[in-house]
Figure 1 (tube, rainbow, N blue to C red):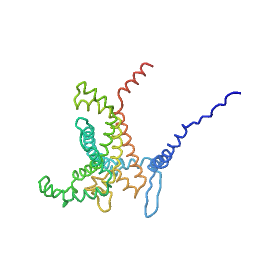
Figure 2 (cartoon, rainbow, N blue to C red):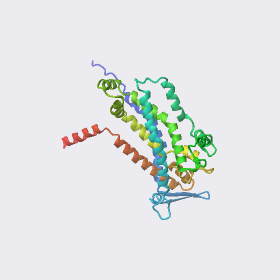
Figure 3 (cartoon, helix red, strand yellow):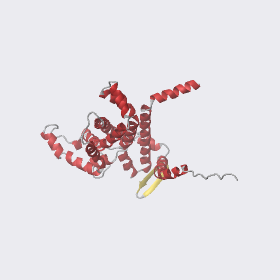
Figure 4 (cartoon, one colour):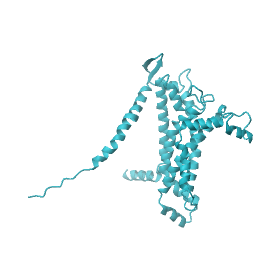
Length: 321
């Protein structure tokens, strides 16, 4: 009588059950709306007197929002410029300060005391609501605000200077608010990346006589590339989609017009503004924003790629050829 074969249980299929909710939610709430956005961008879909009018427009919406049609102003490009200026003003100081803080707080030679408390303090601004922060900063930097008065008293600004009437002042304050809100989150991400680097590599570098700057330049930064890439890509996506702070900071009562003279209006604010009058154009601007974000992300992925691995792949292809 032959031995009975033991029945084995295949557990690998259960992994698919665990990841299925994410993919279902993604398909329903992100991928399908994205496809719909591309579809609506080809329509002239506007509302007048409580009635909806839908006509096929093809690429006409893109021609209109880019200012390529006669009599049309390139609002999409103007607001994209506003968005990029405020994002760059906020992100460059953010990544530099976060890198310095992360290197300082993880340096074993310095041995900073109370690192836990410092991490909590720098992270706190990111959990405060955008509405509260926007109202607070607007109150402090209006013409008669406490900060404005103090800066006048110490003669750092002129008597007639008004942050809310200044293009550079308004954009600078929005960038400063965004920097203050998110540099703590970026710092914690970079700290986690540095702590994941093998300490033995730093010990070997010290034995070889490498200075602190050389260790940071030739060891920390290259090994931190995956985390840096994540930070850069997520920050570019969030920066290009910035809405809450600009939409609440220096706007008229009607909202969605960034003062002064529309110079602090972002792409997302323009999308929301167009949605109330022409859904097709709003979808078109959303598609343009998606394309710009995709291009910037691809540039970041290409510039941060592992060049040694890419060279090895090229060498293997040459050998096969």
